[in-house]
Image (tube, rainbow, N blue to C red; front, side, top):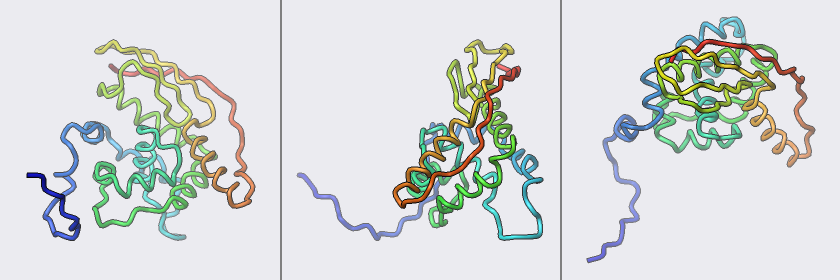
Length: 207
């Protein structure tokens, strides 16, 4: 006998985010091995401890941007929408189902105004990706981590000399282009931003 699904959506259920996120989800693997606690120390000099309005938590911000880069979400507005409805993203960011997600403009303003003229964001993304490589989450691929193209050899158990081709922040630039497109729809001029010359640095990555 074919039964029609019930249209009722108001039934109360006892459930946790931990139950809803698949055990093999990539974000579970990342959460288990990558240390994000270093972020607060890296950004402490960019925040005032006793003045101004409360800022978006920097660890939350960089973890959200890492989700966007990792899953190819190329605008902050879309990223916020995805976080609102994706239980795995909420779990990774330590946001409860009932927590209100920060808005896209808050994310954008914190990213642009606080980090655009420093190398702090670059260093944070580099460190996150180097951890991912060291734990085998990344294998023989090209990553775009802020302004980094990281090419890693697939040989495990060795030290690989990786070339980090540093150009203008690729992911940052994608986010800014999305903002410019939205500003154009409202008759506003595009964002202004300084060009950065590409540079190359070498780093040893433990495999």
